[in-house]
Amino acid sequence: MFIDFFVNLILIVFFAVSGIPTTISNNADIIALLPTDSEKIVAADKAAVLSEDGRYLLFNKKADEPQPIASITKLMTALVFLDTKPNWSATYQITAADNIEGGKLHLFSGDTLNLKDLFLSSLVASDNGATIALVHASGLSEEDFVLKMNAKAKVLGLSQTSFSDPIGLSDKDVSTAREVALLAHEALDDPDISNAVKMSEYRFQTLEGREKFIESTDYLLFDSATGEFAPLGGKTGYTDKAGYCFVGRFKGPNGEDLIAAVLNSAGKNDRFKESKTIINWVFDHYLKK
View 1 (cartoon, rainbow, N blue to C red):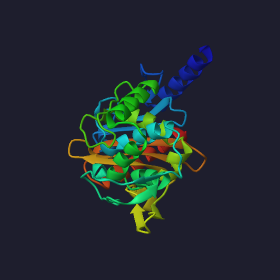
View 2 (view 1 turned 90 degrees about the vertical axis):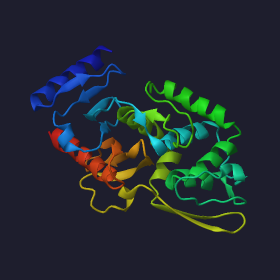
View 3 (view 1 turned 90 degrees about the horizontal axis):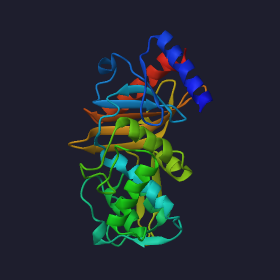
View 4 (view 1 turned 30 degrees about the vertical axis):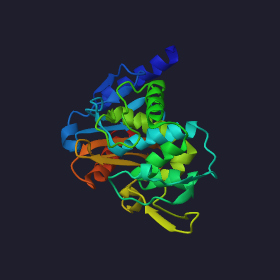
């Protein structure tokens, strides 16, 4: 405990000398770097960059103000589903109960597929129907599944995060930029989730022989001009109230590992541009020093 405090004190002094305002958060002793001109750096309403160990908030723009998070919710859904220890080779047949409006549909009533393909359809394509089917395939009721999502949020220390549905369509699925980054930090450390969100596209065949092709909603995976940091996948989200949202992991040229979260961006592409902006801001003002 004393060593941690001493290290934190050294870092605070370092950042103060660097001219970057620094505070200690009351949540898990997170050190937060607060650029005084964050409004000019990024236009998104809220943003955060989290260090690899999850303890340092390296960029902060209203990072502790809660708001709806749309389909970023699916990261928690994936974590809870994995807690059920799924048999990936088990199969599930899509039914009328899995038909959810919103977004592009890839699966239809009568399609039979294994749980791995269902899981990847949920995360790669952010398919709402595939996600609710994943919940139904877990053997839990939707209500019990959401209870487990909220229980897991508490375990992870996400005090301002709560869920009302497992898809993200509800505006009652809320979190903050910092807690979204912490959620992504946990989720993307899981190899099944990490491998899924790295996929720019995925092809599979249903048991009935229907070919399926899905593309990622993470446009950074198709971006050849990402700068010094390489995107390692993430999760998008959008509703009218949440705005355009994104959280993703980035790997730097010297092995740096950062999580960026952008909430309530103005446009579909803006959230990706702004994610790169805040990652590069951290690199220029922190990692290069």
